[in-house]
Image 1 (cartoon, rainbow, N blue to C red):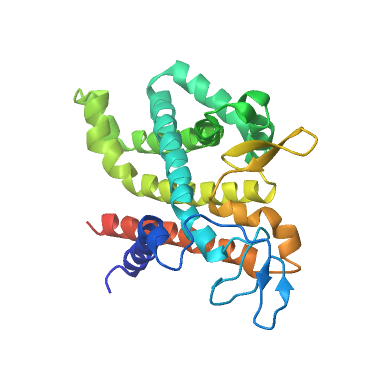
Image 2: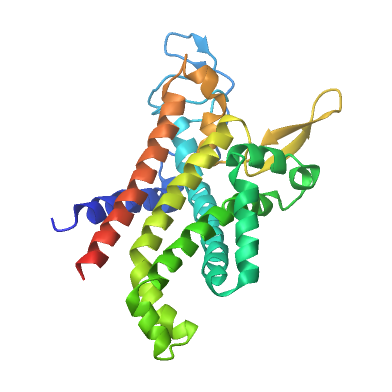
Length: 293
């Protein structure tokens, strides 16, 4: 096996993607995520959720009586869409600012300010404060705003990392030689920057995917979700309910589940962990493949 990291990582991630695409259509998956208020056992005993593992609930259920396996399988697609959307936006804007800051003093100032403003406060605190603003909370386009905010908060850090990569390469003798012979910024980037940054960018991409997945998991623990709905109680007052199916939803009751039904949080933690592992293995494998050329 010449490149075990790439092979194993690709295999794991392929299984996760297949679960996202075909999982909801498997016969033992409840696509509707039906809530069960109670369950009648063979001896006639009535039990309330969370239910233990059984033929009907292979992993048991969550505290709403929803089949836990179905919850995780259905949430795979949304989870992957969130993290990849966030990282793509973050890297595109970060690359524009990071590489552009090498050529433009104006962009360098913007990047520096952006990085400093958002680097002193933990991302999760910033996100909790921002998505709690009424505009974001009540917007019908909340999921899109949520993804954009998740991406923008870390743009300064990513741009700063890319700017350092560019600065290090630009200090090399071969880059200076390219300038002397009249190379344009585009030709210099194509000849020197891109070939020498590929490994770092792949590593950065893998790290950002894992970092974003861990961040939305933390948001799930504090009950901040990408999409919410508003319902009325008996008194006519509005209250917020989660309408997201992503994996972090399973972690919203972790403080109770850790001392009771441990399979609920551990199932989500396991999926999140192996997904992050697949990102690391694929990134590490691609870097090894590039460096061998």
